Length: 155
Image (cartoon, rainbow, N blue to C red; front, side, top):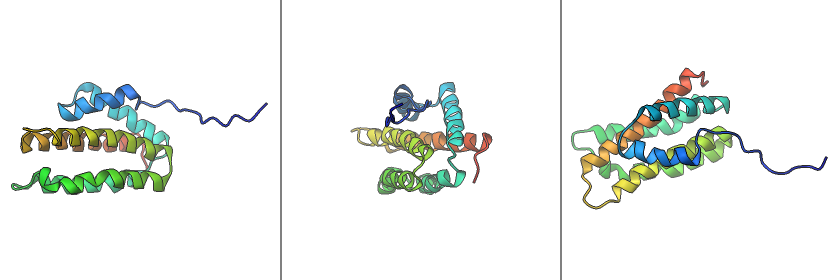
Protein backbone atom coordinates (compact mmCIF):
# COMPACT_ATOMS: atom_id res chain seq x y z
CA UNK A 1 0.00 0.00 0.00
CA UNK A 2 1.50 3.38 -0.97
CA UNK A 3 2.35 5.87 1.74
CA UNK A 4 -0.33 8.52 2.13
CA UNK A 5 1.31 11.77 3.11
CA UNK A 6 -1.96 13.70 3.59
CA UNK A 7 -2.60 15.03 7.06
CA UNK A 8 -5.65 13.57 8.69
CA UNK A 9 -8.21 16.19 9.54
CA UNK A 10 -9.59 15.64 13.00
CA UNK A 11 -13.18 16.48 13.81
CA UNK A 12 -13.45 19.71 15.70
CA UNK A 13 -16.21 21.78 17.22
CA UNK A 14 -14.37 24.88 15.97
CA UNK A 15 -15.87 24.56 12.51
CA UNK A 16 -15.81 27.54 10.14
CA UNK A 17 -19.50 28.11 10.98
CA UNK A 18 -18.78 28.10 14.72
CA UNK A 19 -15.86 30.48 14.25
CA UNK A 20 -18.18 32.91 12.45
CA UNK A 21 -20.69 32.74 15.31
CA UNK A 22 -17.99 33.73 17.80
CA UNK A 23 -18.17 37.29 16.43
CA UNK A 24 -21.81 37.58 17.47
CA UNK A 25 -21.22 36.02 20.87
CA UNK A 26 -18.43 38.47 21.63
CA UNK A 27 -19.93 41.56 20.03
CA UNK A 28 -23.50 41.15 21.28
CA UNK A 29 -23.93 38.65 24.09
CA UNK A 30 -23.73 35.07 25.14
CA UNK A 31 -26.39 32.53 24.30
CA UNK A 32 -26.98 28.98 25.48
CA UNK A 33 -25.17 27.97 22.30
CA UNK A 34 -22.07 29.91 23.45
CA UNK A 35 -21.81 27.94 26.65
CA UNK A 36 -22.46 24.66 24.82
CA UNK A 37 -19.67 25.52 22.38
CA UNK A 38 -17.16 26.34 25.15
CA UNK A 39 -18.06 23.09 26.92
CA UNK A 40 -17.52 20.93 23.83
CA UNK A 41 -14.44 22.89 22.79
CA UNK A 42 -12.84 22.53 26.23
CA UNK A 43 -13.47 18.76 26.12
CA UNK A 44 -11.74 18.69 22.75
CA UNK A 45 -8.77 20.57 24.21
CA UNK A 46 -8.51 18.05 27.05
CA UNK A 47 -8.68 15.20 24.53
CA UNK A 48 -5.83 16.89 22.64
CA UNK A 49 -3.78 17.04 25.86
CA UNK A 50 -3.74 20.79 26.25
CA UNK A 51 -2.69 21.52 29.81
CA UNK A 52 -4.20 24.07 32.15
CA UNK A 53 -0.83 25.78 32.48
CA UNK A 54 -0.68 26.25 28.69
CA UNK A 55 -4.07 27.99 28.80
CA UNK A 56 -3.18 30.05 31.86
CA UNK A 57 -0.14 31.57 30.16
CA UNK A 58 -2.48 33.64 28.01
CA UNK A 59 -5.39 33.79 30.46
CA UNK A 60 -3.26 35.48 33.13
CA UNK A 61 -2.37 38.19 30.62
CA UNK A 62 -6.05 38.64 29.76
CA UNK A 63 -6.93 38.96 33.46
CA UNK A 64 -4.14 41.52 33.95
CA UNK A 65 -5.61 43.64 31.16
CA UNK A 66 -9.12 43.15 32.58
CA UNK A 67 -8.02 44.42 35.99
CA UNK A 68 -6.68 47.60 34.37
CA UNK A 69 -9.84 48.07 32.30
CA UNK A 70 -11.95 47.64 35.48
CA UNK A 71 -10.30 50.59 37.22
CA UNK A 72 -12.50 53.69 37.47
CA UNK A 73 -10.26 55.52 34.99
CA UNK A 74 -9.54 52.38 32.96
CA UNK A 75 -10.74 51.39 29.51
CA UNK A 76 -9.73 48.95 26.83
CA UNK A 77 -8.91 51.88 24.58
CA UNK A 78 -6.32 52.96 27.18
CA UNK A 79 -4.90 49.42 27.20
CA UNK A 80 -5.14 48.84 23.46
CA UNK A 81 -1.46 47.97 22.97
CA UNK A 82 -1.55 45.27 25.65
CA UNK A 83 -4.70 43.82 24.12
CA UNK A 84 -3.26 43.87 20.60
CA UNK A 85 -0.14 42.09 21.87
CA UNK A 86 -2.27 39.12 22.91
CA UNK A 87 -2.39 37.85 19.32
CA UNK A 88 1.37 37.50 18.88
CA UNK A 89 1.63 36.04 22.39
CA UNK A 90 -1.03 33.45 21.53
CA UNK A 91 0.78 32.62 18.28
CA UNK A 92 4.08 32.22 20.12
CA UNK A 93 2.54 30.01 22.80
CA UNK A 94 0.89 27.81 20.15
CA UNK A 95 4.09 27.47 18.14
CA UNK A 96 6.18 26.78 21.21
CA UNK A 97 3.87 24.03 22.48
CA UNK A 98 3.42 22.65 18.98
CA UNK A 99 0.29 20.66 19.75
CA UNK A 100 -3.05 20.47 17.99
CA UNK A 101 -4.74 21.67 21.19
CA UNK A 102 -2.72 24.88 21.43
CA UNK A 103 -3.29 25.58 17.74
CA UNK A 104 -7.05 25.06 18.15
CA UNK A 105 -7.13 27.34 21.18
CA UNK A 106 -5.17 29.98 19.30
CA UNK A 107 -7.59 29.80 16.36
CA UNK A 108 -10.69 30.21 18.53
CA UNK A 109 -9.25 32.95 20.74
CA UNK A 110 -7.87 34.80 17.74
CA UNK A 111 -11.37 34.85 16.23
CA UNK A 112 -12.76 36.23 19.50
CA UNK A 113 -9.91 38.77 19.66
CA UNK A 114 -10.69 39.97 16.13
CA UNK A 115 -14.35 40.41 17.14
CA UNK A 116 -13.18 42.90 19.78
CA UNK A 117 -10.65 44.73 17.63
CA UNK A 118 -13.12 45.05 14.75
CA UNK A 119 -15.52 46.89 17.07
CA UNK A 120 -12.69 49.09 18.38
CA UNK A 121 -12.10 50.33 14.81
CA UNK A 122 -15.68 51.50 14.34
CA UNK A 123 -16.31 55.23 14.35
CA UNK A 124 -18.78 56.52 16.91
CA UNK A 125 -18.48 53.52 19.24
CA UNK A 126 -18.39 54.44 22.92
CA UNK A 127 -15.53 53.32 25.14
CA UNK A 128 -18.05 51.69 27.46
CA UNK A 129 -19.35 49.56 24.57
CA UNK A 130 -15.81 48.48 23.67
CA UNK A 131 -15.22 47.56 27.33
CA UNK A 132 -18.44 45.50 27.41
CA UNK A 133 -17.33 43.61 24.33
CA UNK A 134 -13.88 43.04 25.84
CA UNK A 135 -15.48 41.57 28.98
CA UNK A 136 -17.50 39.22 26.75
CA UNK A 137 -14.12 38.07 25.39
CA UNK A 138 -12.85 37.57 28.97
CA UNK A 139 -15.98 35.60 29.93
CA UNK A 140 -15.73 33.48 26.78
CA UNK A 141 -12.12 32.61 27.59
CA UNK A 142 -12.94 31.97 31.25
CA UNK A 143 -15.72 29.60 30.22
CA UNK A 144 -13.27 27.59 28.11
CA UNK A 145 -10.82 27.42 31.02
CA UNK A 146 -13.52 26.39 33.51
CA UNK A 147 -14.86 23.61 31.30
CA UNK A 148 -11.32 22.48 30.57
CA UNK A 149 -10.89 21.84 34.30
CA UNK A 150 -14.34 20.18 34.52
CA UNK A 151 -13.32 17.73 31.79
CA UNK A 152 -10.13 16.78 33.61
CA UNK A 153 -7.65 19.25 32.19
CA UNK A 154 -4.34 18.65 33.87
CA UNK A 155 -1.65 21.09 34.90
